[in-house]
Image 1: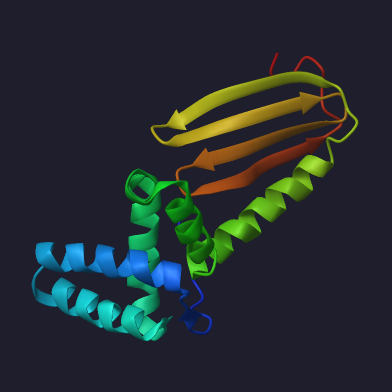
Image 2 (image 1 turned 180 degrees about the horizontal axis):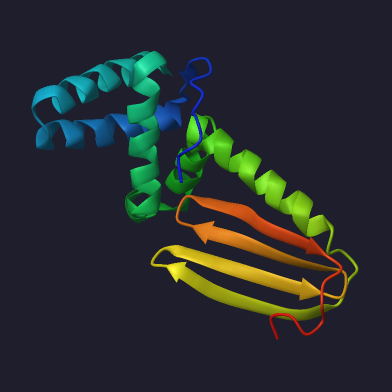
Length: 166
C-alpha cells in the first residue's frame, strides 16, 4: 500500500512554547547525528530559531514531532502540556492534516450507525500493528483498519446481518 502524497502547504509558524521544546530536542539530535543528517538538523535548528519552518524542513520537523509523540518522550519530559503543544504542532504538518482528513472520513462512516443497535463488535489483527474493528448492526457492517499512524474505513456493507461477526 502506498503512502498518500503529502502536501507541503505553506510555512509552519512556531509559537514560543513550540520553539522552546524544539530547540532542546534538535540540540539533542545534533549531538547524536553526523553527515547529511547533521546538516538537515542544523538547518531545522535555524528555522526553529527563526520561528518558521518551510520547504524541505517541514518533513524533518514532522518526523521529529511524530517521534517525540509516538515514543511518549514529549509527555515524559514536558508533561501533558508539552504533549499538547507538540500535538497541536503535528496537526499543522502535512501528515497531521492527512490524519485529520482520515479521522473525519471515519467519523462520517460511523454516523451511518447512529441509532442502530449493535449486534456485534470484533477486534481482529491482520498483522502486527494492523488491527481491524468490525461493527455489525442490522442495517450495516463497518470495518475500520487501525494502524499506528492511521485509522481508515476498510469496508462498509449496508443491509448488515445481525449474525455477522457474532
